[in-house]
Image (cartoon, rainbow, N blue to C red; front, side, top):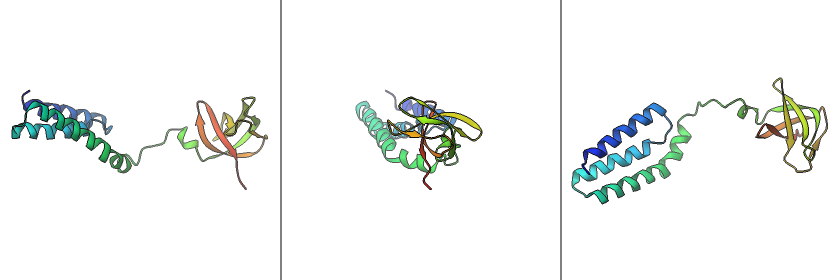
Length: 144
């Protein structure tokens, strides 16, 4: 394999990363760049491929968590994600066993249930949204 192929792979991966900004191909672009350097120094194809794999995986495992933490901090939560932690009003008794119950939150009616398998919450109780499972909110009674 000609060394120039590593440079081409590097450029293609870099273009993909710039186009998507998904923090996925940048790690492999780094591996391709180091493999290109190994080829320039004179190492064989096996060492170049091994270098590409090892460097790519190391970059992915060691730096991706940091990059994800510090980049895209201004990502907007989706509508459903923004409901978690919010308060809602029970408009229909919640009975998890019978799969019944509704709450009103931000002017919308949602089906709701509790985390407890036999949980019940009476109508007109203020609850807090703990999570979302499918199209149902997982709620618990608000602690006073």
